[in-house]
Length: 370
Image (cartoon, rainbow, N blue to C red):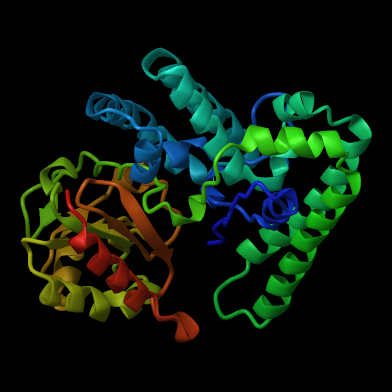
């Protein structure tokens, strides 16, 4: 996943350079406000989930509790929406962002809301120049926007092509180079079309420098498991019961050969980590008719030595709640119940070391305070 890096100084050439060099912060949040260019990403949901943003806004403890109550309502919709067709996803996330803005309007100060707007600018990068409100404030005309949009479209297409490329593809290096070239073109056109008075307005609009690439928590609260009461090696569990522990949730189907390739790693995690700190949970969601037989699921788990808790998700309700699309997929959930990382596919596919990456994430999360 490509993350953004955005900085600010009161030296405008630097502002423009970093603005143009930005790549998407959250690939799951490419969402637009009504009436705006489809080149304008929406990163508000990820921003308000980040504790660093809470501190930057100087939110009170009560405000954070209120935000988390809102998350409990919107996150079960937001996270699975990442896999909807683009037009449907835009509608969903736009509505959720509207609810966040309404919450800040009712529960935050004008200063907090204004600073949040500036943080959103830093996350969106150069694409803020295609926002209707920003264009109006800076006096950007249609001709300027057309030039910016032309290179932005090329940059976005290159990024989407890179994001759709599988790990190990021989074209990855070439695609990364193309993204770098296209992003540089955005920087060039901005320097060409900006007028001096617009540069001064932009500098004031951005406010104090902020780097959203350092945010540690930008995803939703983990969905709960589906209602199935059929569990192996455990009584039924819920995400609420697992607070205070790091949770490794993996979706599998017992006849899936790609899933089998990960079993040794799952067993290693279950044996290596203390149950008091890390819990490995399997969710067996069926693809074949044989995998819809609960008895066969139990027998296969015993045969493969899977001794950790497993939900038999015959109705695919857990699969739907998590918006899952692939067997196998592993999600890492922190001690506060937020998703922090995930990987779809074999963990060691074509030389990948996704298991080691996940272990590094787990070690980091274990060191965090609840």
